[in-house]
Length: 198
Image 1: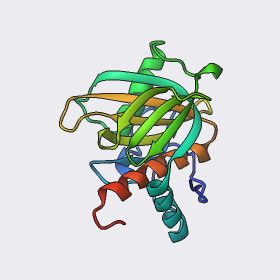
Image 2: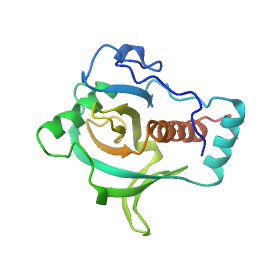
Image 3: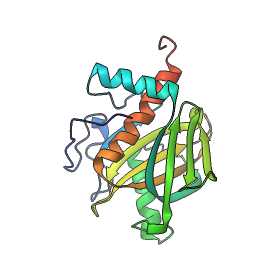
């Protein structure tokens, strides 16, 4: 795993990766970064050494993060295709309607596993896999401040060319951890799907 040495600003709308989203979306949230399969934008390692170590980790093992599972939403309509802002607003609306909590419970801790075949959500101190999604189904990843001082990573999953999708949302321990999850997952997909990478 590698860490982001350049700390990103948490000001509203500050998103150097996707400027088209900077003036819209949830007023209380600020997206600190995202990766999209369709646009190809994503996190870049801070240096060539970080990129090399990230590639080695991707091909040789797994990256594990202890986080809190905030929400799992299935069978969502993707009619508007609003990208990262649509994901954040979907989570926000479900919180407003009390379908999911604003703050994840202490007993909701899980291990988020990122590896070259996709992602797994596992119980802590247990081999039980709660959720599993293959790499090709991951459509977008966004990390943001929810406006309550919590750092959230949201992962959009779904089959290509389908109108239904799912969302997994995780509350992270820090902005660094949230950014590292997004960066690592973006690097995995880049390495696996780019033909000229070894």
